[in-house]
Amino acid sequence: MRYLIPCLLLFMSTFLRAETLLVVGDSLSAAHGIPQNEGWVSLLEDELKQRGHSIRVVNASISGETSSGGLSRLPRLLKDYRPTLVLLELGANDGLRGTPLGVIERNLRRMIELSQDAGAQVLLIGIRLPPNYGPQYTERFYQIYFDLADEYALPLVPFLLEKVALDPRFMQSDGLHPNSDAQPILLQTVWQQLGPLLEPEGS
Image (cartoon, rainbow, N blue to C red; front, side, top):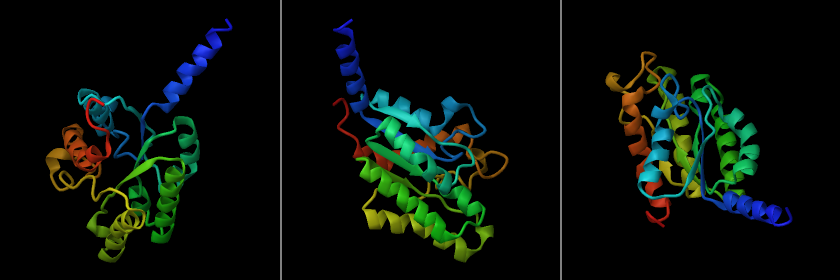
């Protein structure tokens, strides 16, 4: 028994030091309306394994999540998982509800700072709103992601749904959520910015 406890502690410390990728997002990352294993985050986990990366993927995305909700959950997520990389995909639900832009920006900024303070690198994933919200609000909303990426020198995926949003073949009937066929395309969109952040394959 006296040898078992030190061995367990060694195992746990090694596990906690393992590279972890944390995704904090909304329904676009939570595989809303489709099987969980077909979502782009699950596909990312498979892709990492196939490329020889020993990276644990934790998907903490929740359908309907806002930047305020993400901010309230983030400290515990950072403490529990100690990620080396945080993929931050939030803001869409704020925008659809007409949340003041200053609130959205402040929440995202705080999430970036908390992640960086915890030693994690941040990949920011942006979203565009439907045009019916008016050009002034939608363009200012979209600019938030670019401004924060510039301010904190972050890699940025400008628009997660860039290659699928206007193609009905890739969207669910609500016109807001991508279907299963779209998920590999979303992964490709994210990978363009994520790939260069990772250790060389097979390391």
